[in-house]
Image 1 (cartoon, helix red, strand yellow):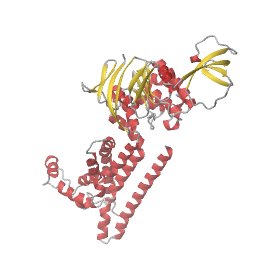
Image 2 (cartoon, chains in turn blue, orange; image 1 turned 60 degrees about the vertical axis):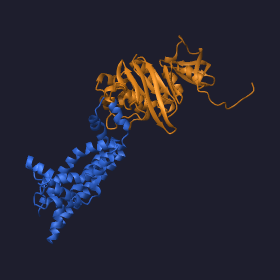
Image 3 (cartoon, one colour; image 1 turned 135 degrees about the horizontal axis):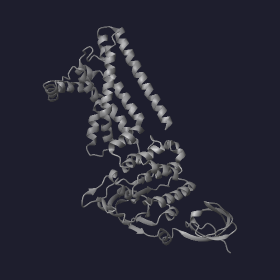
Image 4 (tube, chains in turn brown, red; image 1 turned 45 degrees about the vertical axis):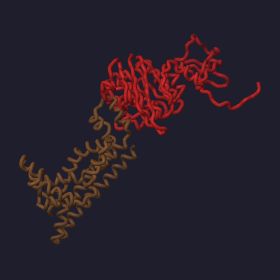
Length: 221
Length: 287
């Protein structure tokens, strides 16, 4: 059995989720308190991957990552980085593709907290960052967990975007979801079933644990 | 003059737009009750002082330092103003224990210890707020606001969620802590008896304007919102803290802090005055 696509999927999901935590929390925090007139634009952009066919996103990333484009050319000239058909490119695409799965639960969690919590902390002289870190985030643990799990599971389940910009280079971009398709095309059903059953089991266990932990937290409070 | 403010702000109410315009000067240790109908801007005034809402015009000076000045474009953030604020919902941080809540507000261990003792929270200091009753949470909120070590203490209807006997206890505690720490206090309240018990000044906000009174009792009596009655009471028992009286057929406890005549002995008949709220007459008989 070739375990490489499964390890690659896990690696991609782990790195993407970590990056999304770092990027998603400030975006969610901003959206949760903002009353700016153009807030809806940012919300729409963040949520686009929810409704967009993955191939559309994949197509535009394919264009953006090419050496002839502004972004691709800039990265290649300055840092000698080639995002197309690379693991780095997959991470970049996954971050964009799973962004709403991290941002939306955290934003909802923050909006459900009473505003008096942050206001009380401000009157104690605490900065916005300190309030977010010490007061708000510790009180939305279920939302954080939901964001982490959905982003992780969604990245593992990615197919269209990965296929468009990653190709299927073994050990580099051939993740488990692509490997299932690849093995079926080669009529190698046993290997396809192996990848599929591991993905099914992993996704079920992760989601089951999330609901279990969230149910425990909600009965405690 | 500790606090000098002249603030204007347009309020949007269901009845339409209204201009809130408050001018007030307070000294250190003043306890001002803010009284008026719901939605008139009482909480907004507290929020403007704390920096959580911005006035449209005017100024706010604390110890001569401008916290807000519309003309000079000065508006200190709530973080720089640092006032003690007891919110209506207490706003205790659920993820922190009681002592962590106080420590987060100001890591002054000596003051925290003293306040935990004064508010009778020492045994509860390692509990989370959700494990406490409403009255206990209220005491934590009060202690946490005092830990901030600000010259200003703002209380937004702090006792409104408590039952009658807890309110009585908390009133005593607030009075005691105010006496000790002498913070200039502004308290929003609808409770007339609470106001006359605690406040030395009264800010009345109505649709027609805002007025500051030096004598809350006089205002409420003039407005026929308060009556004073005099009764005779028989002293049944005395201890360090309380006096047990028989008034008519009822027995009443009076805190010793309210006794101004000495000495009193069991069996004495004394005269007492009480504030009561005028109520509807429910029975009329010929004498």
